[in-house]
Length: 212
Image (tube, rainbow, N blue to C red; front, top):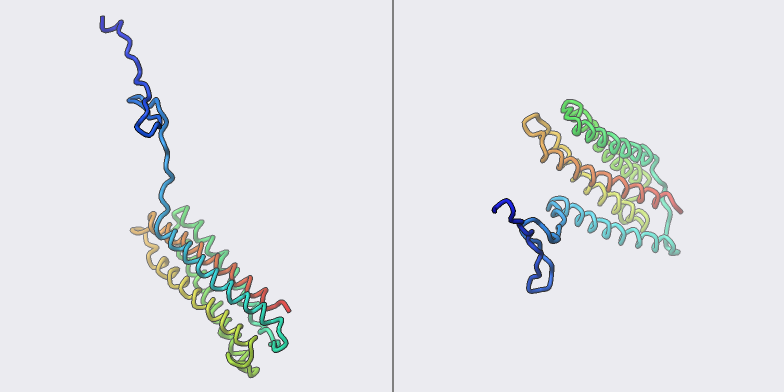
């Protein structure tokens, strides 16, 4: 008799809100929720949004001031071309470091991270050299509006970039076989996002300085 008894599948029923729910054999629909965004990633995106708004405000003020009659043009230091090239190279070597990490090639990872750090520090040195060239030409922070904006924008960008170098150095020292796991991968990925963001930001500022 037991073999002849057919077990009826559990029917979906409605809850008090009128939404269908499945029975024991999953006859109803299940609501799938998206995985939560990691707090570090969310914090980085919020920070980059704040930095974008900060530089957008100063860039807008730069453009408006440049149209005024009191605007005095200043020479563009030639070293900016070299520092910009080094910054672009650093973004490329950082991507090579991420590639080595995905392949679990720790020696290559350390090498690419070291090269990225070297290019990043060279970029900062290039920015300081640009300041030296302006001072040699008698142009200081309070000389005129143009020099004030140049020192301010390059200085703020340099400070944010030094923060990226500090995080990159920390990741470099953590790149050991015992710690080469998901945490290191996430740290380097976040650092790469921030690094590329600052690279793009500098390219915009560089274009702004070159435009008349």
